[in-house]
Length: 289
Image 1 (cartoon, rainbow, N blue to C red):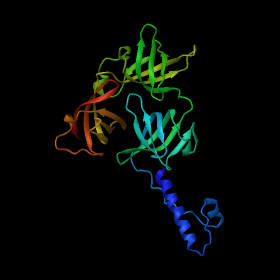
Image 2 (image 1 turned 120 degrees about the vertical axis):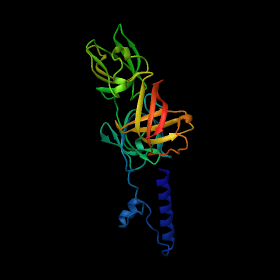
Image 3 (image 1 turned 90 degrees about the vertical axis):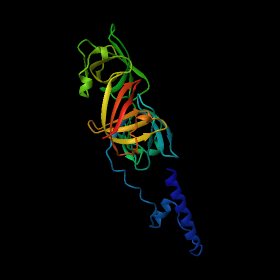
Image 4 (image 1 turned 135 degrees about the vertical axis):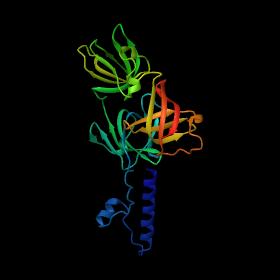
């Protein structure tokens, strides 16, 4: 927004200088005065929203900076992600539009994003006063086989939630064939396992899991092929948009694994083998694809 206000100040200064040159006649400077005089303020048109494949992200909005037009999005199991926004960004609260100036930290948010160069830009921000009901993508904190109680971290909040897992609830691995071919069942519900969880309200006030899809277990190996969105050698993190599932993966890597002689840049096609450990993917192989 500081870019926007800088243009406003420049426009106001230009109007005052023009007024001083017209025999001392004061020129209207405010928007209402300009409208009354039949004039229009001269403001630069905003550029179009970056054209690219959009990605939906969910998490907590933190550290909103209205000067730099950016905030941090905390996604479960990942490092905070910097998100850019400006006057083109549409903001909604419980489905109703709200002014961009009212954007603040929020526990529950869903974002439609696109890449603007190497930065992530928010096309729209959907805020929720209450967490969504029905489906969560989350990580297992603990599962008690005796009480059948499952504790997970909510992808849209830092607060854990607890659910009952009835004996008839299916626990199934989904995804890549090498992963789904492995053992499945409640033995997969160990700390750090990434799951997609369907649930419904229970009679005693505690939610009940009706279906659990296991997406990744600690130590499991995955192979991703897709387009490189960003790469940071200082932090040892790369972001890959997987062509198979159109999903965004953040992968930690050692620089020694990067293809020799290559100068990787956003848009390059990569094949990355990664192990799922400590709630994140860690590269074991990186190659041009």
